[in-house]
Image (cartoon, rainbow, N blue to C red; front, side, top):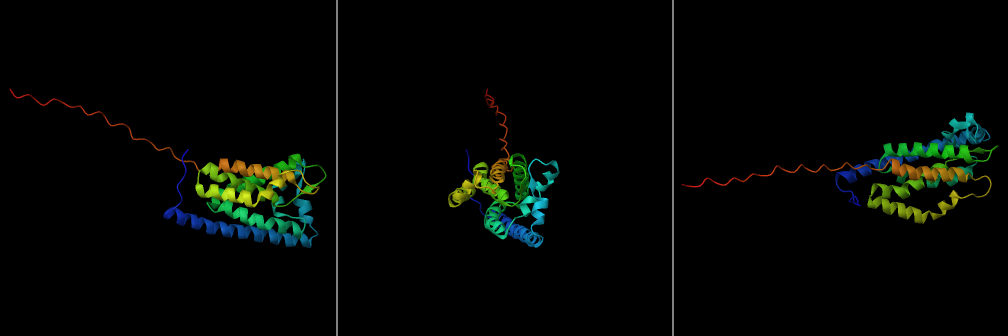
Length: 219
């Protein structure tokens, strides 16, 4: 198995440019969910109840796309904002376009998991499923892409944020471990689906054999 060399030259400059885009994308994402939170709070969190996910209700399937932008309290959004920014930036710094695809997969996977597995008569909202999805993605991305720098980043994140793994297990009532688990799994799948595909090097065709003729003999 071959590994990619560390970036240098033009590749490093392109990576820096994408990292800047990733920074502003995550800043914009946080601004949006905080603006939504202010409106949500002002309405007594009616948005969370109206656009959160209700398990196994067909009319609630579209809410899988809106639930990550909604929260139920200031403490709820505060606890998600830091990890969302860190993991989101690390997931996006190598390419914003790929990041958007990964995000879509995580949102849909986490939302469907909540819709299928969560107990009835409840409403689920919050960005924590997306947070765990990004976490899973950055852990495995380096292994699938075979990039040493991403392998190191994934290992460091797994060690520094090891407590995040406990969110994948059933916990106290009111915590959507289902969204966490399916979000994490979707992030791992995203690492495989959006891996860098290398073109096979075409080996040059062997040259035709050279025919050596004996020189004419002098009489």
